[in-house]
Length: 236
Image (cartoon, rainbow, N blue to C red; front, side, top):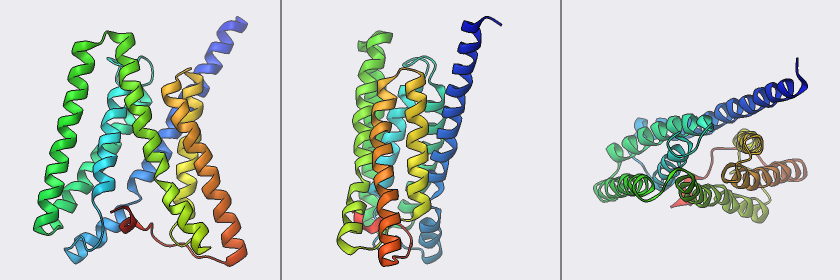
């Protein structure tokens, strides 16, 4: 076989593998709130839990889904597939939250959901009507980078909490591990595709994931901190 052809084949295989791995690890993150929503359904109340992380998660998934569509970006379909799954999960969580929330929260969540859907429609409309394909990718790409970086920055609160309390009880190991593995998989995928809109935010996510794992190892060994559910109430 021609060495160039073999190199391209190997490159394609590793690129596809990175995309598939990123999808699998992302799904682990998408299903992680299920225990919380089982509790909401069982108690028929949202208690002190906040619905904002799921509203923001939906917006992030929709923007990244749009970026991964062939009409915007060529040859990054794993980005579209994983975020389509993520958007479905977030919609399910939001629906459950609305059904079991008190009236004030219910109205607020419905308003935020409509706002998110409206923002997504505007982004899609503007990107198609005002930008040609190369510039369309740049426009949506910058939006996805801002969205992803702010999403990856959210664990900074938990990192600060771990340092202050010297306990890892609010930073579950497997959730931190899945975040790291997802980030590094999509970082590799973005590098294979030479797409900075993918590898830059996921590179930041990888660094934050490493920090979480190092902190978990240090504080769990030094102070014997336990691991419980994520402190979702803190994201109010």
